[in-house]
Image 1 (cartoon, rainbow, N blue to C red):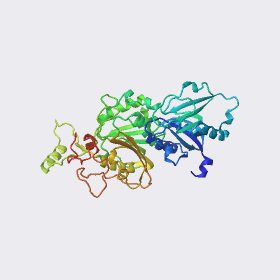
Image 2: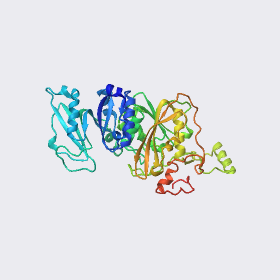
Image 3: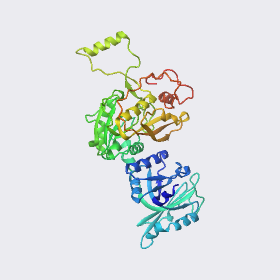
Image 4: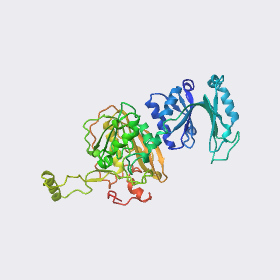
Length: 464
């Protein structure tokens, strides 16, 4: 580590919830950028081990530690770091060497030792009550949980420090619980994930954020809760509206006190959108529709659609169609444009192009990309990039044979681009000269149980 970091930054111990471990570092870095302060993480991969609930971080001030505790969904608490060791003897030696950090608490200060453990149990009598300050002692043991243990033991590490602040963002997971929401559907995103995505957008007052596949609005509510204004659209307006007079998204937003921050919801296909100028939004957040089973709502995620026909009309039928559109009869029903499946890898490429056009310089695109675990390669993410767009985070939510990657892409150019021309290539035809990403034809792979054999010919037949 650079010498200047040891003199200008102070050490803090972050205590994490054991959930979505790969999302920790991107969330820390995003919140630090949101509040414009420096954060440094250890270069040693073992110090960032996602299987462990503790991480030492370097910050400029205690105020920055408090900001992390108040905004990061995955932080349970954060401590001023005093020392660590594989035994209590090692820990005591380090703690005595840091006397300058804690000696001001010696005179007339009541305190509590909060002793907790990971992978083993501690008797209750080893803790004290009614403190002015709380000292945390964290015993980390290897392997599976062992029985209650008195005193020293075979630890991976024992950490010690003063409590700065308990994490106050984690209760938002319960606040935004989908099952407590007044309006949700089988495509609704899990609350904890939608909150993590909101942090990746750097949502805060004064920002305008767009969801182009809004569905039932799961991403809109936490983004609006953090103070941003939200605009949403979907090719299927029924998903956003529901069956009551007041659209479902506005009803759910009212439940969270953020209805005034939902600017509007519109029905259109993103490949035939009404945006006539770019650089409108500070961030784009979305979960593109892709057919798979939702593990949160026990429903089938809808497959993506775009305007168009699966098979083009012959000349006679095309002429009849134009005649009908030009001179409709008095009893003709309203025209409903046809739709066709939107292949996921094409959608991802188009989404990045749309983001480059609509985002302000420095703006972020945050979205989920489902992929096949044993076929995924790092290059898959880069097949969707275009000039001026840069991947800054790529975190896996692992479900075994498949997973979802939370991808964060930043616009790194100030050049203005025209409205994008979206992909029109045939989803059945593979270009053998280009890399085929693992998320291509994901829907078919999912319902075939991720067989290693090639997906059979009819990729675009709906409902398979």
